[in-house]
Image (cartoon, rainbow, N blue to C red; front, side):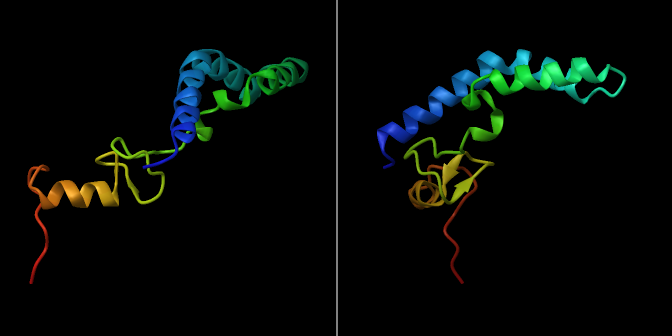
Length: 101
């Protein structure tokens, strides 16, 4: 089980990303648009820099839904490899069986 502080920190980041998503997208579009004058693009970059760092989407870390583990994460099922294996051994994931040959 991951530390509760790490899980809560990641949830806080997810909330901030959702809160600032529209504002950040508008500023990025202005900053990257070459048809806009250079001064306006520069101002957009400055405003982007003033937004909270945790409002950036790249700061969110993938975590297991069950254990909160950050490493060995499978995006397709949103679980770590350990949680996935334990559930599949008990037959709780449809279509997944333990390999044997």
